[in-house]
Length: 169
Image (cartoon, rainbow, N blue to C red):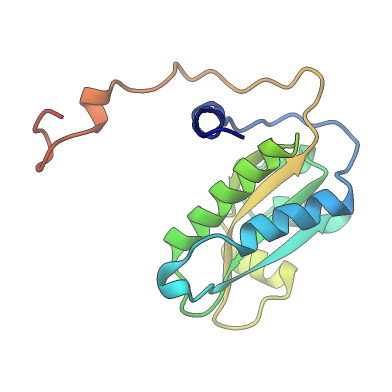
């Protein structure tokens, strides 16, 4: 993959919410877990763990969020567990790495917020001091899968500044 291919992959990554019924093979799931495991973290503490969730357990987990239709539709979910002392920023980094890896492997993905994290923790059997607020829905894209079009992106002048907020880039 060239530098331009990698950059294009980043710019073109989209959350897909429609999946085929075919579950990803275990070797692909292991590659996603490896991409998650190798994500950078603050002070390299790696205060995270990952739970691959499918079947009825995935259905139960989907009850822990308010907008979880993609989770219900996906073959699997990767629950991102923040271990004691972990940082939510690092969890976000893991989610993005997993989504980029899924895309590179021909899989679709969508980040999911679990609004009722105490319920998610109970369902996942998490020990005290840990939490699961986020998951990534994963599966092969459905034949008609297309990202939602929310109108593109804000202009650079609306999001990027030099030295102080509001100063033109």
